[in-house]
Each structure stands twice: as C-alpha cells, then as structure tokens.
Image (tube, rainbow, N blue to C red):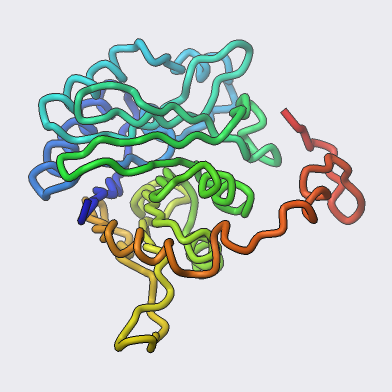
Length: 297
C-alpha cells in the first residue's frame, strides 16, 4: 500500500439532524471527487455537538443506534462511492447515550464502532456513558489494507489512548473533534504521533461553530528522514493544517514510508519496560487531582 487519503470534513452543522445527514452526504461526494479513501466527520455530527441542558431528556431523544436511517444512509453512500466514511453521532444507549464514531468501509459495512472513553465529566459530557475499550480494525481500501484506530477529542489529551491503539496495531488513528485548537493541543497531538510512530488525522468543526475554530490537522509521525546512507535529519511531521474556514482538507499519508519507519526507529513498542508501569493502572487519586465529579466508568 502506498497512499492513504483522509478527507477532513471541517464543517459547520445545522440545527436539524436530517439537514446534517443531507449536508454530510453532499460532502462525502465531494471528498470522493478529491480522491479520498476515507471521509472523517467532526465529533457527534448528527446533532452538531450540542448539549441543551435546559431539556436534557429532549436532547437524549436525538440519540440514534447503528440501525438508524442516519447510519444506514451513510452505509449506502459508502458503497456507492467505494469510499470509507467515519461518521460520528450521539448513540442511543441504556441510561445515558454515548459519543460515538463508526467507521464504515467502502462496501458499506460498519467495521469499527468506538465510543469516547475520556468523556469531559467536568462539563456537559457528564450526561454521557463512557466507552469501554479502544479498537483497531483492518480497513480494506482500493490500494490495500491498513490498520485503523480511533479516539475522540478529549481522548487525545491522554497518552494512554494512542499508546493502547499503537499496541493493538494501529497505523492510522482517526480523531473527530469539537473544541478550540491552539498550540498546546497541537503539541499534544503531534506528540501522540511521534511517541507511537503512528499517523493521526483530526477533524474539527469550522470557525463559526460555537467553541470551535477549525484547524483540522494531520501528522504522519515520521520524525527523521534519511538524506544519505546512515545520515538522518529531523523533519516536521505535519501533513496538513486547515485554517478556520469550512471545507474539505485532504491529509495524504505515505503508508509505505510509515511502515518502513516503524520497522527501524526506537519509539513505539521497541524498548518499552511495561513491567515497570503498574502504577499507571492504579485508580488511586491524591491531591492535587481530587475532583468530586471523577468517575471510572
């Protein structure tokens, strides 16, 4: 496999789920015209990432499941376009809904469904059920297979998220997003790619959506390139960064180069010492990190 092209659909949502469906299909068609292998939506696209807390029960009625018309329509479109789609939505779930991404392959099959694990419990996402695991799947493209994983927004701020996906074999990690992107969040995401030797593609809402500012971006994780035999120089891992405008931004990953790099460089899982990391899975919380709204499930 040589190239893998992800269309970052940096959009502004409407106030209506059916309209978001229509707009989403329109932009998937445009992404295919631009040569995309996969089109990725920002976080919780079906309702445009809103939390009308004055009537949370009415809001929960917007939750959908994998068999909904919304998802089925994207499945049919993926088959028509022969292109994978990463669609995001408020997922119907017992008690509280989930913040979910489903990856639909070019044959219309849902090959991965991931619910956000690191919900923002300090804010409105306390009304969501956190996901239960990170997943990786083999995605069939016209150019060959690639191992895809996913995390959502706040997940990227925890190194464990990308690390688990790397350990499960992910080569590319998709990241739907809905928050302002600035230098520190860019640095976090760049680091996730660097330390795990993975490609990362993040789609954010465009400027004009409340509390979002575009700047969708992608990193390939290849920190060094060989300029002559046994001579290497540092390089910028950034593939693309959008501005604030609504549109489609193509992140093209050179998968052959990523795979060669992962075979010889020193990060990822090459020299880890996991027997020294037991404290990482401890649930004990001490000052200054005690919060009254912390939850482990």
